[in-house]
Image 1 (tube, rainbow, N blue to C red):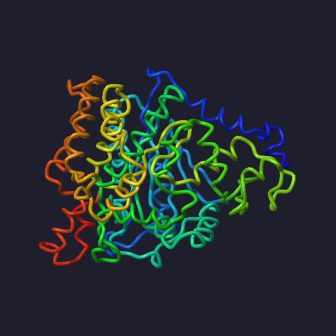
Image 2 (cartoon, rainbow, N blue to C red):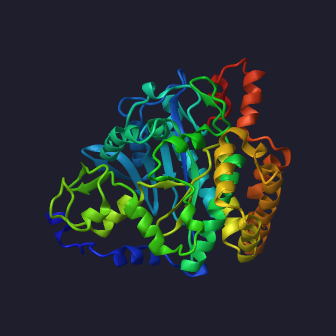
Image 3 (cartoon, one colour):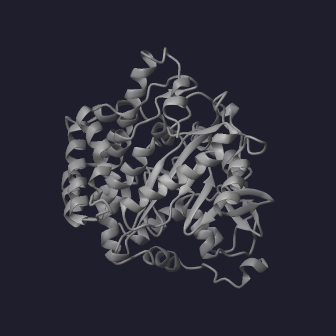
Length: 454
């Protein structure tokens, strides 16, 4: 065992992993909202993705944010690869997508201020360089051949392993963007209630936020191509997790699931060690081929659970993972939607009542139809748009009940207005862009980089 881990308690029992998730339980007054969003950085004159290094580069953005706004840089093998500041971080996705992982905040007003501040800071750095950011779920113009990989060791391991398990994993890594929110639970029972409700409704969120209709400059046949990517990435670590709805669901059952997910890597002494395909169970017995005799720490488990990509993922909180990246208003609407549904008991109960008798086959069918059909998908003969109208209003009621008021006397419900409009019209952001593509854009996607740039 290396010096870096010898003084840290080894993980040898499943009970230690169960305790890890149990430690996420928080009383309601400590529940917070953590919003994450990714966006594409591109050169103004060519719309091409940025390289890591150079005058117009990802590195220049990170260094600019650190120098001008006091973010603390994080390095890997001498390369700046992230920034940290007061519980928030700026990180890099494999193809140079820039991600803000927001601090845990109390209200949606706080979240939207954080998003606005971040985008303002980024703009201060990028505009003089001739760089802008695009919020969409999939790069509308460029294929993976034109993407520049970021210098992070874990991504090299994932890039090599993913094609062994699916055809679209590398596209997912390099060409997609999402917005998600991380939310707390108070107990195992509360976690189960929230997990089941949010997982059943994740396809509905995918439809409301569908915003990836183009691939390499042409319509791709989907409204959320990003969501479609996950269906052919890796069946071991993606999907709707049928077991969540089964008797016996709890922290231990999720531990069992994660123990069945093959590993990618172990981080030791500043380096990522490729253990792709090996078992965390074997790791707990010191049987990894690359690290014989070495036992995992809780940090290894923390790393491992980030390598599963289901529609809802559990850490010490629940991550809502179904939505495409989008414009500023959607970056506030996504957390508003889920906070309204999950942080008010009456709203949570009402939402669960709508979905509790859906069968596993029905949930899977809806998940498979939504990427192409959006709000026109159906379940039990009912158009998803009709359910969306009802669910958005339930979320609105949940936010009203929260009663979190800002300095202008507004509660949090106005952050849902954009979703109410989509649910009412049935027209997703993707369909809005497709209409523009066939009319005023002259069957070109270049205008998207101008009209929808941050």
